[in-house]
Each structure stands twice: as C-alpha cells, then as structure tokens.
Image (tube, rainbow, N blue to C red):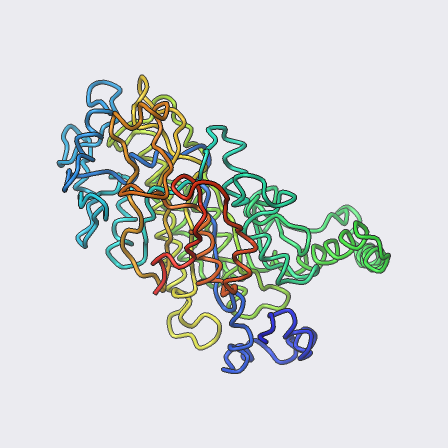
Length: 493
C-alpha cells in the first residue's frame, strides 16, 4: 500500500533530519518517488477574478463555424454608444478588434467549430496560448447556479454546491488538511485573510500582504527584550499544543508555525530584491505604469517560490491564492476600447501573469537545485464566481452563470476544453436570460468539480478515490446534475 508524504516523512525521520540533509535530497530518485503522491516539487496558484468576470466578452466567438454563436453574440450586444460588442475585425477609432488577440494556433469551439478569440486586452494570454502554456476551459459552472456574489464565491471556493460536506473547508484545503502537519505552512494567501479555497483546520496557512511588512508583534519600542518575549510566546504555544484540547492544540501549533514564519519569510523579500532586482523593476513598470495590485501580489508569490526552490530553511510553501477585484461591471464596462474598464482589467491580469512566468523562467536558467525546470512546475488556475448575461444592460452586464476558466503554466496539453455556453435567444429566454447548465447534448457544461478534480489528481497526485471523497458527485437527473465524475480533463500532458 502506498504511503502519503506525511507518513513517509514521519516513518523515515526526514521530518527532523531534512534540514541537516539539505535541499539536494529532493533530487534523489527514491525520494522523488516517495513524494509523488502529493504536489511534490510543484506549485499551484489560484487566481480569483473577484466580482463576476464577463466570460462572454473574455473568450468570444469570431465567426459562426457550423452554428450560430457569432450571430447570437451580435444580436445580444450592441455596437452603438455604450455598446460592449467586440468587433471581429481590427476595429477603428482606437478600438481594438478580436483579431488583435486571435491565436495563430487552432482556437475552435469543439461543439460548433466556431473560431474563438480572446478579448483584445488579453493579448498576453494569446501569446501564452500559442506557446502551449494556457488551456481554455469553456462553459464552467455547476447545477442550480447562484447569482449572489457571496454564495457563488463560497460554492466555487468549496466545490460543494449543495452543502453535501460538513463545514466550509475549501476544495484545496481539504487536501491540505489530509496531507500536511499542523505546524507545516504549505500555503500562503496574498491578502489579509486566508482564501476560502485554502481554508481548513488541519494545517497552517499564512495571510500576508507584503513580506517586508510581515513580522511577529513583539513591540518594537522595547527591542532589548525581544528574545525574552519570543521565548515566552514559544513556551505558551508549546503548553497549548500539549494541552490535549482541540482548540488549544490548534492555537499552539498554528501560533508556533506563525512565529517561526515571522523569522523566515521577511528575509525572502531582501534576498529577492538583492538577487533579482531587475525583474522586481519589471513588475513595477508593467502595463499601466507604476505597477498594479496584480503585479505586486504576483511578485510576493515569486519571492516565496524563489526561496522555496532554493531550499531556504523553514520555507516550503507550494499553494498560493491571489485575487484581483473590479469585475462587477453593471455599467461602464467598455468593449474593445483600451481605456475601457474591462480592457484594463484584462490587460492588468494577463500581462502580470506573463511577467511572473518570465520571472520564473529566468530563475531556472543554468540552475541545478530546486530551481531547475521551474517553469514546468507552475500551475495557475484563473476563475471568477460567475460570468455575466449575454444580453447587455444599458452599458454593462448583469450577473450570469457559466464562464471560462484558464489553466496556465508548464506541462500543459494546451488548446480548448469544453463547449462555449449556449447563448441562443430562444434558450436564454427559458432561463431568465442566463445560459443553462447541462451535462448532455452539444452544449454540455464543464463542471467546476471536474476541473478541481483533474488538478488534484493530475497535478497534486491525489489518488482517484481520495479525489472522489473530496469532491463527491451529485444525485439527480444525469442530464441536469453532475453525476459522472471526470477527473481526467485533457489539461495536462
């Protein structure tokens, strides 16, 4: 019977000896096999587009192919003042057309054969797609969708649309809880609070805005007794961890992990800035001038990955969450105008991710330690809590249902997975203006749990049976509910 990473470390003694043996031990083939049931030497980043990204203006029909997608799109979205329809041509008057972001490699909807294009603000995504570093997942959703931001976000974070699982643990958090010790820190949220998809009660997750501002509150006005305070806190955490009471043990373990992280993580900022100052400047100079929240957050992730890959003691984070807000565009959404709100958001995210991946690739140049082949160890999942309706309102869009997700990084199969949502007028009229979720027919939806399960199984190396427990199937009519699990979507090579 195969053993988990945690079991292996405990039984072999590497949990305590790892620091003495050094990061080179990870290059040992036997060690690599032992770690193969977890994420191992890989990294996963969840990237949340907060507010409900308009997926129907993100991956857009360029023509009809063998169906009516482009005609349906043009019938629903206007071109006059306030119109958000994206021109299939090159546009004019400073307005970009879809051909500006049309990939040179095949980019077809598998159901209708219609050519697709990215929103013109996503030209960096087009380049990543052409390089085989981006997979488009179309029509992503779940049965009986919610149009509430809070409810929908929770559903996407937990992968639990009907509350079948007790508690509010995240879909990735359920994996972290099973595989890591309470004093481990396998995950970091670049924010002030732990992201929903990483929440659980079995291991520690850091929430950090900026590494250089992260520190334990020892009271800097009295630095001469800082060691005494540190010793006192350590003693309190040890006592709590040995208490036997569940809450006390959790506080003790998480407190000890946080105190140790406060000694290790801030130095990652200085090391990165000293060694990779040129790339740090690129994040600051990116697209809109002066940097953006996206680039600054991704740079924090790059600092941690750099430290982890180099084998910095007490730094081994593999899971991250980053988000960007502003997608609740009921008004002033804009179409292909470079000054439009949606255009600027897309440009910010896509260009920021491209710079991040360039940084990761540069880290690996000529290296023989954990930085070797680093680009092939990165997986980014881009998602939003729902899409928008195909019928535009005055000059924006209202809350909708299914939309695209993107998987970005190395080791990907590339291409388009899943079908564009059905946006025909007759169909959306029957669903209050929204695209219907379906598990049958030509417009079959991509269930978000199949996406999560594919990542858990094929990127994080979680066994099939465990994935099924993390993401249990629905009951009900197989045409309308997710009753058949497909954890092998063609995302990875």
